[in-house]
Length: 537
Image (cartoon, rainbow, N blue to C red; front, side, top):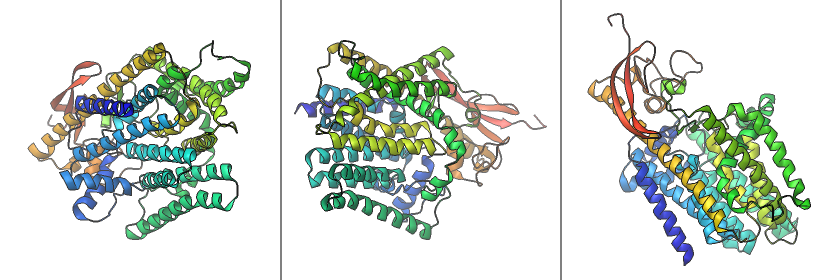
């Protein structure tokens, strides 16, 4: 019963955070104009026609979004709310996963809140991007696979596989879940017929459906240019990618170290509990190696594309994209302090991963299979991040379910009240940033679309004469996307006679501005409509 009280409190906090941010606004954010158009085609026209910008399978997300659109009508607000519901399910699944891993209610509550207010997860929950749906289905799949490894009941394997299937049909990378399941069963059960059947049936079914779906899509409308498949993955692997691996390890480690600081505060051993005990010495070696990679990556932080300096975005207006008028900006010492905290968190998290993972891998430990599954997922998904051409920061949150499996201690431990207070204080700081920065992201986008409505409706300006930012031009798509940089933005701009921007730009004069309230730091800012100077001016 007490679990339900914690779940109820998590739900109440999530709803309060949503009200503070305010998700209302009929406009796209980041790439979700493409996913929204695909959902609109299905929900209103009944045809499964995908937008050309698409790069993932997306089917499960289209079906989920369509269910909400059938109930409430199509709008970006409705689709945004559908993601917020999936975000909530992912948070509750995270709570249950921590409980399944042997931890108490208080630890589970704090770690579920850690997931909820992760800046990237929280911000992306207010979009129709694929990140949060993929995270939620992945978390649910991991939860039920962990239950299967502990209890060996068929129903948990079926549920884990169903949610893995949903993840596959949001993003192709969901295939790592049945693959990791196969590896785990083979490690645990060997080559016995029953083990082979259990190991390969879920993987075979999901691979078969994935290849059938990709083939159907190719024949029905042609695969979108960026659609991810094995051939495309092979194409992004080259010597340049391998040369970037130390940099990417450093970047990924800093981000994950920052994300996991509340967890580290809870379970990191004290000096009295054998932090530097002889048998723990080898656990520090991977941390030191990663520390070198972080120092190498330090000048490139923060990474792209959601988190930038003092806010969450991305700020995809012309001047923001070219790093003009990107305000407010934190002082360099603040940025370096945050990177240093991520550095410390990464060193501690890797130490815990090695130390606690080693305990779980003990042959006598009943969670041996759980550890095998978690490690396989980390290696598969981490390997993809090392090789993918984009490696955006928003991809990093998908590592959190797998890391929880290995970093948490193998058994419940007594945690002092001071530890809970420290972790809680960290969470409050992160939550305050996430809520304020996401509020500002939605606020300036509402002002941006007021500016665009002013141009298109009040002034009757055709969209092909406007650079309204990535999402506006992506939604209207007046011309093919550019392949090269130049005076025009790279996103479907025919003529940038009118530009919506955060401030002044060379060659343009201000027509009018649309103010919005900013929380980080508190103040009032504006989005402006600019018009190119002419000879008559």
